[in-house]
Image 1 (cartoon, rainbow, N blue to C red):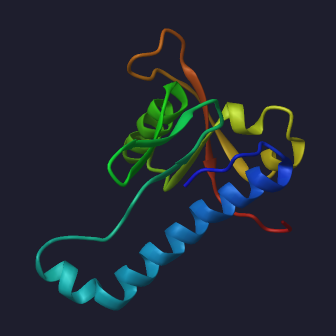
Image 2 (cartoon, one colour):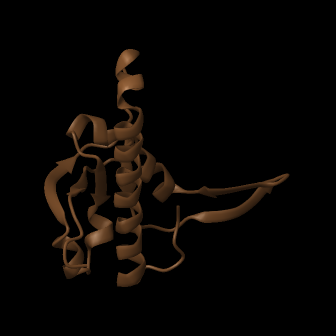
Length: 131
């Protein structure tokens, strides 16, 4: 998912979308847990929220996509959810200048990210209580 604005409302909407996705995964696991356990699986998905410039549009017949460093970083953060045992990660860029947003996240420190010279500040999205 993507948002065209970087307002507090858009950032909060992105965090809500990440949590809604986690709730949907929980529901699939609840409904189909026995079937999944029978084949040794558990239904989970990681989510990442990052903020940055991208290029977007149609790049082929009926194909719409986003391109850019921000997309790549979001992908890398999503992969990091497994290593950091966090269901949803938020980059420090999302929280920069948004004091309210920091109340929804737990700092996990800075972490090296493949393809980047400097480590990235990462937060776990825990809850949106009071939002």
